[in-house]
Image 1: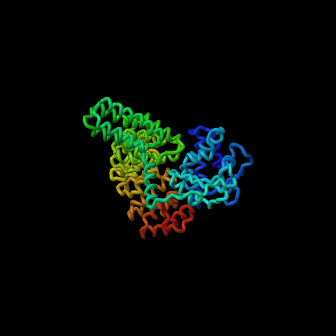
Image 2: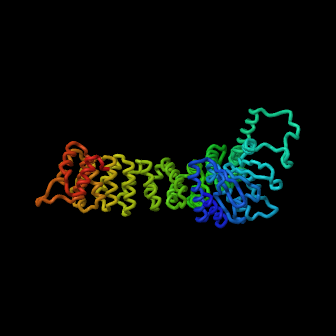
Image 3: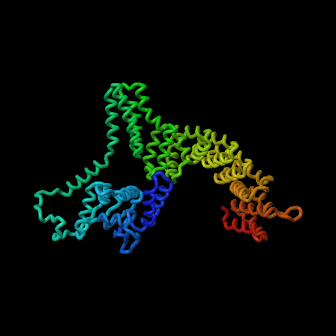
Length: 540
């Protein structure tokens, strides 16, 4: 893990942060932590001039005291112990790499590594350090929590007893104690209030104050200026990756556009222009592009809130980017957001099925099946005759997922499709839903010449569907294929006989089992194996 971390630090030094090599090194470094967190929630390393030691064992060794030697960089500035907590790689790996990069080129008058770490206020990284001017002094435990109260508590709990003989360390007994102390409940109250203060999103407060002023002030000049400020503020919010705050701004401006007293049509359009512009394909594509190149991605909930506030036309852009995104986690985020948007905007989803952009149309088809949108059945049925085989296949799979009576009726038409993959997908969907009205067409396909010329996969799909649907009424036909001999004593093709055995296993009745037992001693190994599996109930 530490070797991969060193490589990520070097990549951070060499490449721009949107470079694929840097992003790949960062992903590998984060992945290297996973096996360790499976067995422990923290790692504690002792820092020497050339080593990081874990439980007394050197786990990272650097041969020289160079500027890119991470142990030496920490040791020379007084750090003697490094503690990493679970989730460090997700939240604070990049800030640490930034600090290491800055400390490599720091000048004498600038802050040292220890000061940079203190300013960052880490939550998942802690360290112990000594004052280099008094190196023999007791090390001070500095816990890098955001919020001073947690750091103070950790310092109080972990600091060793103070040696009053060491002149560099302050002894509290040398000073008069104050006459009054806070009660524990008062201390806890102060901690909670400080936590609340740091948790306040000041941008939301700014938006709320601007919109309150917008509603109170009816002057057109004031309202125009506030709308322009909100427009600019949205750019800053998006650039900082605060998608939840951006969603809040869109939601509040939409509500203000409806309820502000005396608002004119032009003023209303000016407020709504923020949401409309953000929903445009070019602008939304730029946002998604920046996410694809970013080192850190927003939470799923924050991205969902932003997309929920966009116009329904944004769905097409999201569908288009699901195939373009290079970052696997971004694709997952977009998949989940697209599912929400599709369920909430069925009419737009149906419209996109007929889109001229084939990537958008194919994703709309897939989403229609995933959300079981019965309103999309008619649009999907049109695609079952599309010249593009992949589009026909996607439409068949979506209809099978929806599985409404109307969808299954349209599926019956594709049993005889010109392409083998479409026929197989259709047959499997009919079997999975046990759609008995398709039995006649399945039986006709089994008896026809097409089945005899088909490959084994298609034969198996047809016979399994037939066995699922026919019941005892189909035993006679299957028995003739499995056991009967032709005019000159020749039996059917071994593949057809094996498929007939599988179909009888699907039926599973006493008559079907009796038919299978008559072929239990068949010399043809393919047929015999199929019969034995069917008798064991192993056809699947």
